[in-house]
Image (tube, rainbow, N blue to C red; front, side, top):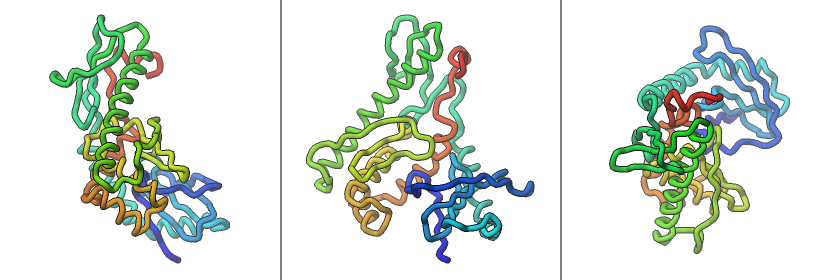
Length: 268
């Protein structure tokens, strides 16, 4: 049986109509549980992601005992992926309390009495918001600013692709920005692109790769050789770009903002 390993959750197109089951793993494993997913695929797939943990994808009718035997045979691979994720989390921990990642750098969160909407002071590396009694509104305004800033950055990347001569569009394509749990971006068959709000925390190089990746899906809705050849036209250093984005996978789980105490109230 052909084995395929899926590691990068941002690049994995999930199978539709799948059935899931959670299985406990032995105590000597560094991961407590395994997700077993049955779908209409023809091959076995094993993947480890920051958000989903360990997951084995099986053809319909595949038994639990057979899936566990397959996973146990790949224990060393699982240990390497877990170690890789842990080391990346240590290299890119949450920012200190009262700080946030913004554009790949650390910005302080500062409340003030005389500002209606959140904004940024690039010189002082601060995200400034109006200090009010309801911390939920404060957090919402900070995220609205992060979304607006990311929107402008994505549009700029799309304009650069348009100017490159390789763009599969004459006018800037429409896209959405929303919070997603396990992907940096997605592109549907009808050409609708979505980008994860968490990209606001990453630097321009990482953002450029994700935007190019999704634009490439406007032409090739798969990850075959033709897709990678076109992606390389848009992003000549695509392998390094993909690796840089993968190194920040934990941001999908932990986020990129460490709120000050006064903004952690009311269910923060």
